[in-house]
Image 1: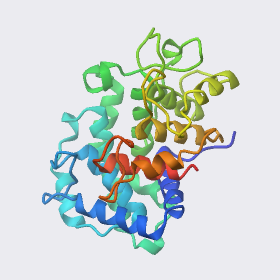
Image 2: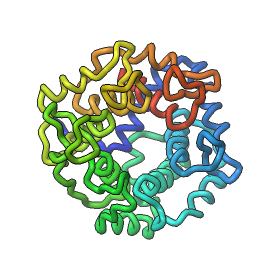
Image 3: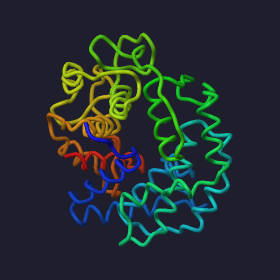
Image 4: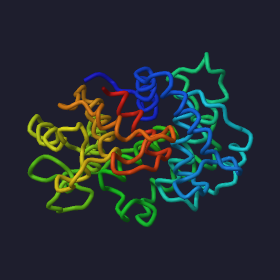
Length: 302
């Protein structure tokens, strides 16, 4: 397969395609929702209304494609106030990506392009890049999800971080996390696969990491997890699908040139709320920035 862009650029491009498929009124509603989520401190809020760097990264991704007008000065101050060496892998990635996106938002809307994200690593303070290099070099398990630096999810995050920071990295063997079905878990020797882990492994394989080959049988097993409404569940035994699992599965499949068997459009419509953002699914009425990103991301692969 041909060379693939960085994950951040792929996310941006897919979100842009999602915007193109949205009705103008839905776009306006989402833009207003994103703007409403900026905290007085400059960052963005989580579901509890508290400023949260994790949600901030999603807010900036959405702002970059919805052309939301934000107070960038306050946002810059909020990012500068964080100490990267105290953060776990998830929040360190969010901090660095947020700084890149902030630099991107300073570009006039008419001049923005996915390619403009590529050189923005130079917008990162040297100390932040050094903090990323140190974490990936030491592999301090306490700062990785589930205290495991080599799980599919942890390696996916590590790949994102190295791409954004312009650092070299070589992934570890993913086969200890692979089940006989060809699907993956984030736990070694697990008996149940998860959509999150399998999606992460598919992305890693697309970038040549993990020492795995994904065969047709594995893709078929993954596709079989999709529900008739187009959603993917976190695990096969889950009673319903959720938007996180649906978005990650659809995005991972798209990197391999594949589309889900069932369109998730109806599921997305049911997950869109009166607030102007997406919730976790039809049974959830609370929208947030993370799920709104997942909703638009899923739209982008339809």
